[in-house]
Length: 170
Image (cartoon, rainbow, N blue to C red):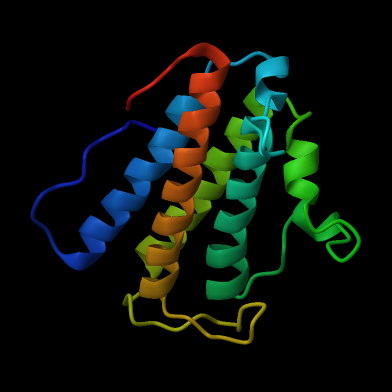
């Protein structure tokens, strides 16, 4: 995924998608080139790792766009997890997954999400099913939430990557 700055002028749908794509590209850029030990590394005050973050972001892409917005059943591996007994499964197991697999899974989830958004008739369209809190958000809300979610974790990734090898900046 190429990192392209969002346009300064455009319609809501275009700019919203561009801002989300920019954050997604930041995540991929900051995750590349790490060895298995670096993928597992965390900061002293947190268990968050690059691997866990990539797996989490693939999960939330699938959850919000596939499951909630489109009403599709959860796909593997998410549908095999006992979330009640292991609510942080993706964070815990992602730390030990190979980086190439994590990046491929994240890119695949992004591709599915992008296709879902492209097919939607309107940003006002409500999700097919309610979320875990019983709310039925619009596609607009989901896109804005995913910008926030992805940008927040891009900030975490900035700190992790700087602590691993000093990489800073965009």
